[in-house]
Image 1 (tube, rainbow, N blue to C red):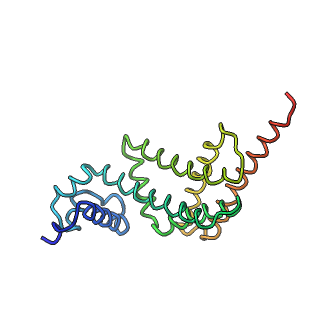
Image 2: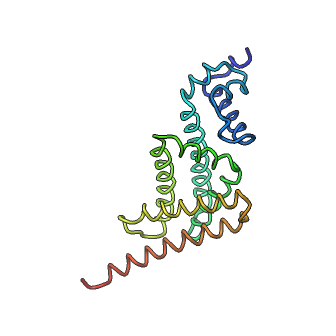
Image 3: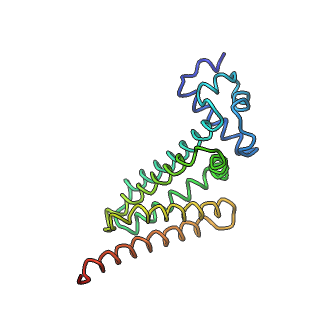
Length: 204
């Protein structure tokens, strides 16, 4: 009866919290809508009403983490970014720290989604959204070629993902992962800006 008093949004959040707890303790393979309903103390139709399928539940978990990463970076940038170097440091710290806070669960959710047909677009959209955030942030302090900026940031996001996985697995420290992400991003931005300047000044 207590469960019925929750609003729809609070019920959804409860189900997502329950799902993430299952992934944390048992891995993504153990995640089913029936299991989430049982652990949350609701009937199976309630879980199906919110997510419809296991893929829908995994997608909701992915979007939730993606939103958390974006919000953490946006908030930090708004408060502290006053130079390209500061911006790059903030973005690197926000990404690595968010993944470390979530732990191995995000990697497990992403891997599970990758194995389901039709979810490639969701994962691509997530990477592009974060790359767009990176691009808008660095363009305040550096001029990047319009044709290359987004591609460059997608590469940076891929590197950040790989470094975050290494840190989560304990093969890199938090400081090492942040520092490497900073250097990759700053190096990529500076190199692209230098190449663009060279093209503009080279006689045709």
